[in-house]
Length: 217
Length: 217
DNA sequence: ATTAAAATTTAGACCAATCTAAAAATTTAT
DNA sequence: ATAAATTTTTAGATTGGTCTAAATTTTAAT
Image 1 (cartoon, helix red, strand yellow):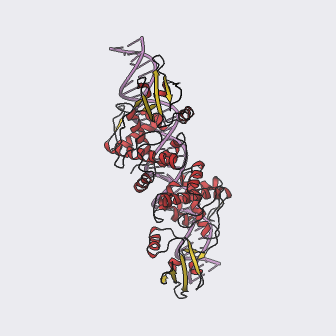
Image 2 (cartoon, helix red, strand yellow):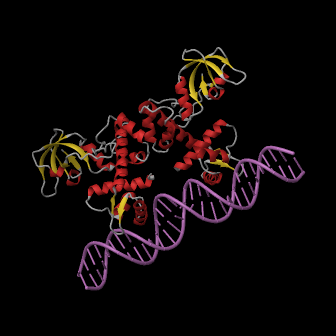
Image 3 (tube, rainbow over the protein chains, first blue to last red):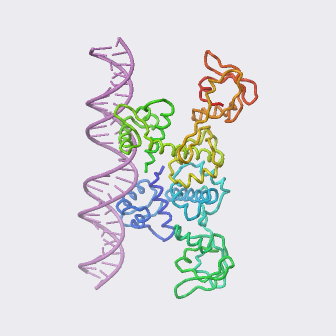
């Protein structure tokens, strides 16, 4: 059995591993966990003793199969709770992350199985992130970033890779809701901004910083 | 802001105070919190420093108005989550207590306000215990124990004062669900058992141990 | 290839919540 | 009223998670 804190570390290691290949660094973990590098080192020794991570001093860290299993269960719970908060309780997608951070650590297989059924076995959370199945298998839906779409193509917004409230609120104001249709007019070679028609409206510019965090298919 | 553990102590002090008049003893708290008396003493000093309880050494303990406010918020959350688990997720009333013990410590005013609305502003939890309003006012519905009903009277089962799974499962098997009609034939003066018709069926005996934990009106 | 800079680990400490064992206060019984 | 039993508190230690400051290792720059 893993503690609240251990589960958090495993989840964060999983998420950082997904982003970049290879090992996760102590400093990256310190930033994500809002602690100091020294504290991270202590926890890494503990997780390594429990065979949840592969860890060699100064060499960064990688999940073991068992560590990945635990991480995926936590992520599954997190994303199901987010669906509950948005679909059932009416929260905005910009508000649910901190609440799901707490709810995800409630450990009851039965609870999560019943919640999943109540929500209709959703395949993705409100940000488009896929929900691992009960056995901990993570689906990998095919999609690409808006920055990579060729001009003239029409796509659908299926996810975001940035979850901060300000970013999500900006998307709301711009009409960029999940599932909306995007017609790409031009990708600006100079600054990477994208000129795009949103849900059939007149085209407008979306900065590269925004476009690279939009997943489409 | 109170910690998970502090909230638990306050909730337990509230519940023990409701049962018996006067101060709550250190030993009673040790039993309820599943800790030792020495640990309780430490926590009591801490809660007293925060002005959440009135505490004099060897004299037992009583909530301050502020402590009672916190306790009632925790109880409100506990009972709302129990309603959610039974009404929405389909748990049995004998299963939800341990889960609600965890969910009750998630602190978000907005979450609990939205949950309350989603559930239709229930006035009682699945065991018939009243739910404090958002301001922390606890309703006091009029009711009495089944042992106090005079023979010949017909009443409705509105609550229970024992929440253990075995007890609740026994009630399920006996047909004693909340809201069922009870026609009292006789209260046995010798052993306190009650002969009662449940939902119009042929009368049967209910032991005093059971009857005194059934609230009717 | 050295050196400077950055990242990481160790050493030693702290806080919250708990424990055991022993001391002190209160209650009960004679 | 005094002794015995019970309850409660104190003293001192432990565990999980964190910290700062200093030491060490790795990486980057010349």
